[in-house]
Length: 167
Ligand code: FES
Image (cartoon, rainbow, N blue to C red; front, side, top):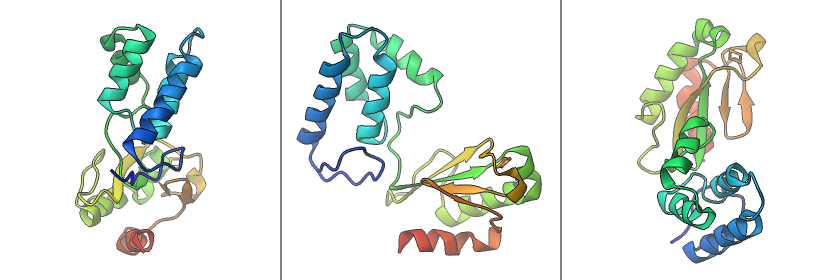
């Protein structure tokens, strides 16, 4: 299977290579104390999210009950158990952005991408998320596309922005 997720840490293509990397991550860290979260972080970088089979493997290898590992994943918002699209669009819904058009901007992205917040387009090109503040409130409303911050975004530009990322 070809790995299409652009958020992975390694330039690998097969499930077998990914599994080898996962094994290395676990073996390097498993006997050191307090390594569950770093292992989960590295695993998420590897796959772009935390697949259930990887969580089960980590749970078994570290001898930590699955429910405990799942509880930790659920506690931290930066962990995701859902596969994400190639591009992650985050629309700020913090106060400054919200009152300066952030609400309409989010609606425009939902309409153009035809997904809700936390969802991924059928072609796996985009995931839509919200954020509370990017620290760029003076230039609201703000979005990010992957690591790029885009400021003073207009709802009328959303289709064009999406198209520019697709091309
Ligand atoms: S509220 Fe949106 S960047 Fe701060």
